[in-house]
Amino acid sequence: MRSALFPRLEAPGDDVALRVGSEQVTSLELAQATAALQQRLTAAGHPPGARLAVWTQGSLETAVALVAAAAAGYQLVPLDPKLGPLELSHIVNDAAPVVALGADPQAVAGRIAIDTLPLTPELRRHPGPRPPTRQVDDAPLLVLYTSGTTGLPKGAVLTARNVAFNLDALARAWRWTAADTVVHALPLFHVHGLVLGLFGSIRVGGALHWFPRFVPREVAQALSVGTTVFFAVPTMYHRLSEAAQTDPQVVQGLAHARLLVSGSAALPQRDQQRLEALTGRRVIERYGLTETLINCAVRADDPPSAGSVGAPIDGIELRLVDDQRRTLEARDDATLGEIAVRGPHVFAGYLNRPEATAAVKDADGWFFTGDLACRKPDGQLRIVGRRATDLIKCGGYKVGAGEVEAALLEHPSVREAAVLGAPDADLGERIVAFVVLDTPTEPQVLQDFVASQLSPHKRPREVHVIAELPRNAMGKVVKAKLRHA
Ligand code: MLC
Ligand code: AMP
Image (cartoon, rainbow, N blue to C red; front, side, top):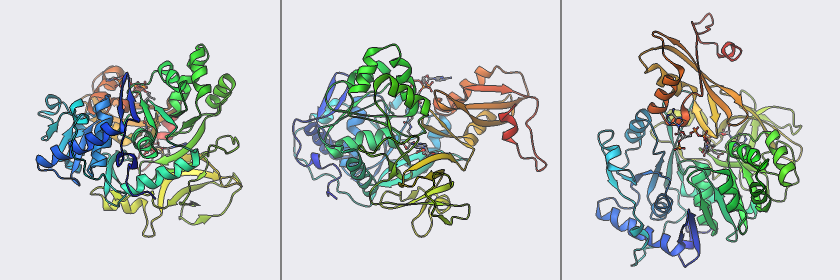
């Protein structure tokens, strides 16, 4: 394994590393930003190793700051700038970052007590001595907040080695090189857009063309120039396949890309087939989690295999296990087991949550994903579902039903709430809430209320008012009955 996390920043030049809108940044500018950020933070009493929150605004400066702070040796807590007050105060208390990069001081004033550091273009136009950049070590690089079935989000701690190992394995699987430009329109506060899209491009040596907003036609145009690789969630492929029906430019862009990769949720066969009929191209899938990064990937030269997320990436161990965590050897594409993985990509643990870590990672280093799959005779996996029905994947975002229920219960007119995921052709699953009210309230008011308390993508897309929640003899809500209500 190469020793620097971002080798190109050790000998930077005028090669383009990032493009956002009409602006672009070279690797030399990234290296300069790395040195400048380190200098400014150290002068403020925060040497490398300190934990920084990053407000991931939709700007080029955000992408520069994420790379620069990582290369300078800081721990990063990337945050959705639209986090609601409940999540924001929880994360800031839990992670205790020393500074908020890129946060609008007015927006955080009164909500949390933290120093802010603005991100300006001057950061990358800062000639001067450049200390060596971060090496691939076992120190924390990222704390990524991820929802669970209950409670508030947990911070998954990923090390530089987790990230570097995973990216190198994916580069081999996809023959991903410096000649590729990755195009994506994903947020920079989750694994998919941040680790694969941004850090991946910088480590592998190519460029990233990032779109802070997803607009099918703009993304397709970017895909039609040069050698391009596209990373997206299934909802984006769904919307592209709709757009491709009437827009030849969308067809052309998708047909031109070297590789179309989908992940973060299951890609429906219907969308795969529609895209193939319109563009002649197949989308390949890869499967991962915040806590493990990517576990399986269809390789660039694998033959098509319906519904497959590929075989385990190089250098990791993967097992299917039964309810007692006993290994299932079957490779019959029928026996169902939970996916467990072990290897240099598995996270260090949840921040401040040893019991939560012990519940998913055993003493031998095996991580239990909660995802259910079958294995084909050639070792490729097909994901069939997940153990926890209270986890919803909406547009590729993981949302805990309990989090949305707790937010609904904060509304003065809500007496009881139950939330579940319903199948949705566009979002994969849409968040549906059932509420019992004390005072009549419009569903839209409750949707907006959740959007104001939590990140807006966690809002229920449907709210049903019912007289009482169905309960079993133990008093537990029976969500299965609501599904058919
Ligand atoms: C809507 N909005 C509201 C609102 N209703 N705001 C306040 N109150 C309300 N009631 C706003 C939203 O904030 C947003 O603003 C806009 O309206 C549209 O919101 P949306 O309807 O939620 O977005 P949508 O168009 O449905 O988004 C689809 C999407 C998005 C696919 C673009 O879901 C997305 O980006 N998904 C990516 C998720 C991802 O990266 N997952 C990776 C997890 S890592 P605005 O201003 O923002 O437009 C992982 C591991 C792995 O899973 O394997 O990869
Ligand atoms: P997150 O916690 O947001 O990182 O989400 C991880 C979860 O996304 C996994 O546990 C899976 O349930 C789901 N996931 C990721 N990639 C895929 C895929 N290709 N197919 C099906 N599910 C996926």
